[in-house]
Image (cartoon, rainbow, N blue to C red):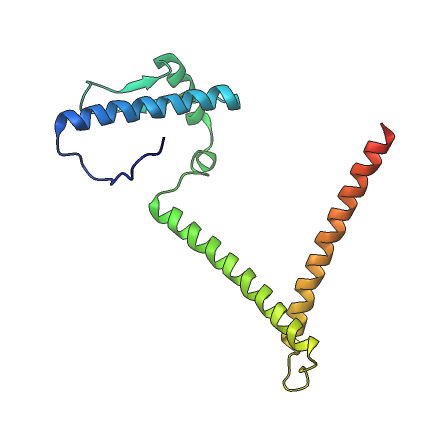
Length: 162
């Protein structure tokens, strides 16, 4: 069953907001429980809300204390290694997109040079820098293909031994 698109804004009706909060909280806690079971990791949740005095903890206070103490014992650099705010996330996404764009530009240019070379139009202009880049792209692809061939051959050898 499909779900309708949800607009993320404050729900004006208090009772509807409370019910939505409860359902979403239950969903999050269910997902955390599934992660702990399926992936064999330890996790906890601390949820503050206007509907209860003090925080709600999952799975229990003792387990939360154990995990928080374990986390606090880590060096600061390990504690913050994977933490990021919205700005950090956007910066990372932009960097990844730039890298992908650069790869696509290199690939596109290599393909363009291949087309030019196929029609013997290389004499019209100096393409030496572009040809070096294209050769680098081709060399990388050849290396990837060689590695895949080696991997496949080693798997075939393992199958034949059995």
